[in-house]
Image 1 (cartoon, one colour):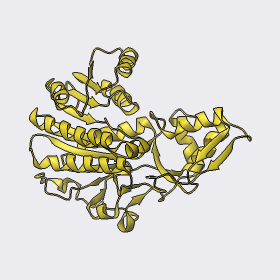
Image 2 (cartoon, helix red, strand yellow; image 1 turned 90 degrees about the vertical axis):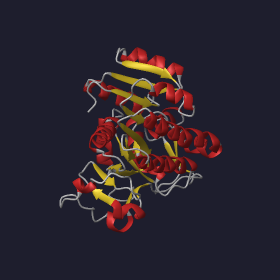
Image 3 (cartoon, helix red, strand yellow; image 1 turned 90 degrees about the horizontal axis):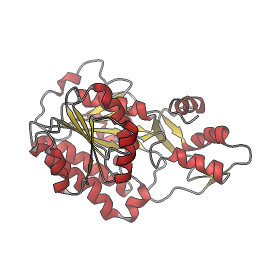
Image 4 (cartoon, one colour; image 1 turned 180 degrees about the horizontal axis):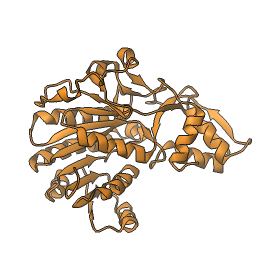
Length: 334
């Protein structure tokens, strides 16, 4: 799919972007364009990869001219990763979140249509499902814009990929917990009942590729991720990085924070197919003009019983600390 093709990655200097770039380079592309605002991050990535296939472009998804300028480089595929993601920042500066996560997505969609991009992959989050914070709302709108874009053209295929937390990415909870253990001898958690979905970064990118390759336009692919109690995550990290003197303090859920995240809502269950152990696919609610969804309508693709009543929550099928410990080892954190 990607051999001798030009791929654009927005927000490409982040953790997702770097791992995506690393795996893309193994697929013999013509060019991988890293499009982001951070000059220093681009220089750092340029030096570490040191690969002539990579093309670094300073730009902002919020700027139409900036987006159109990079799209003129004969882009075949777009992976849209750029976003404001920190919940409190989005709550406190809503206009910035709207400009990046909604207007930026709209600019990329319009430009992809104008310049004849083959496939546009919007990378979304579980917080977009039944959102209670502005970050979730903006990513939910981004999903709707991306799926609806299939009605605007038959030349570009637009799909969404929805996941949860990826272990150890920039700004994620694991480095923060480790820093608290080492520096403060105290870890703050919001609620001991809180659960979250987790996956390692290489696993997430592998699923991103799988969904990208089979997507035909209009679907939302949902990564089938294990879930854990946050208190168990803290416990495993304290056992490894700390000692008996480390205290755990519970302060209660913050504004905009759920106890359990949701990957598939109750309203989406009727349009959801269980594909395999790796992911689910949600058909679009609107008519997109793509008429060949029947490729999934075979007996082995059936909705799992757990989805029939309430969707898929991080409170479902929780894994134990041994499973979590192995996942952290695989992710390089233990």
